[in-house]
Structure formats: C-alpha cells, structure tokens
Length: 79
Image (tube, rainbow, N blue to C red; front, side):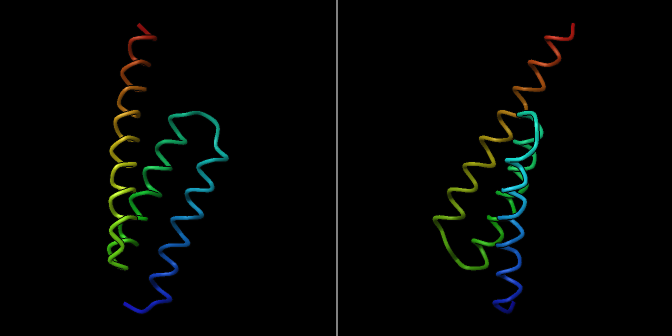
C-alpha cells in the first residue's frame, strides 16, 4: 500500500475523532470515538506502530465498555 493511502487512513481517523468531540451526548461521542480508534488501529498496523495499536486498542475496549454501561443504565432508568 502506498504512503498516500496510509496517510489518508490516518487523516480520516483524525477527522472522525475531531468530529466526535463536537457531538452532543456521551453515547454518541463514545461510539464515534470508538470508530476513530478502530481506524487508528488499522493505521498503526499499516505503519507497524505498536504504541498506536496498543493505545487505540485499549481506547476501543474502554469505549465499548462504557457504551454498554450507558445502555444498561438507560434501560434501568426508563423502567
């Protein structure tokens, strides 16, 4: 894969991550951030950049955990 394509993947993750900071609501923010971090993982794999892969993998797990907690809390709140 050429370097321009790899850069486009990295910049796409950056744009999605920045967009996530502009949305209202924690659920939406975490969902979009998880997507951005997943794309960063792909970017890190293409660069063989283990700090990016490890950091973003941890972030994805944390976002998914928090998303599940928000869903559970919302179900309990709406009973």
